[in-house]
Figure 1 (tube, rainbow, N blue to C red):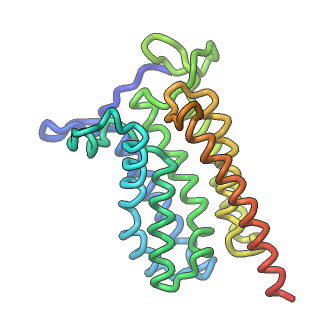
Figure 2 (cartoon, rainbow, N blue to C red):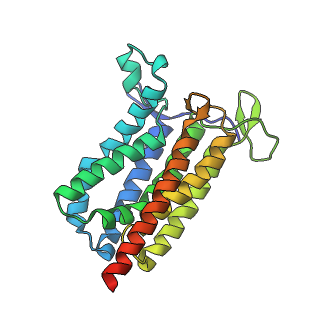
Length: 249
């Protein structure tokens, strides 16, 4: 893959970055699909639209806060650098934490059906990630180690694993699978648990290839968190399934 230009175009001297365009595109498409599908899972589309307007900023805030906290030595005392996300520096796990926390609060306050809303959001989250990951390509970041594979990305003249591409493909396939499962789910909470398990399995693999991972002491934080998410989602999958079976009896 050739070396990309991170700037899409310039308006009045302000560079508009591909990173932001791709993230915004992923968010808008994901939200649009979720709103259209809302009635299928018994979620009010109007309430969902309003909830999304409230919740959309939280993934960005969470993703940036998470990244800055982990890499705090690089941002100490520089507020402008902390809030400057145009050059990257967003951690997906922080974004997911922010999004789910906001969604949990809103759905509880508005009695929207939290698990149904989470299931509705699961395919859209995967689609947003599939699109947004290409922002890493344009920023020449989130890549793996050296490789001579024909699809290697050029980083400073060295061919490297395009881990953003691996994750993008996996997340797009996950979007298709979860979309297929919407009309076939057996209990509320099934889709969001499947998303957590399947995305985390992929993330463990991709993180093993990356050279710019955030670290928790000697461990890659994304792998630790992914393993934790898999365990939690497996437990919740069992609990939700048993609860649904008991309600049918």
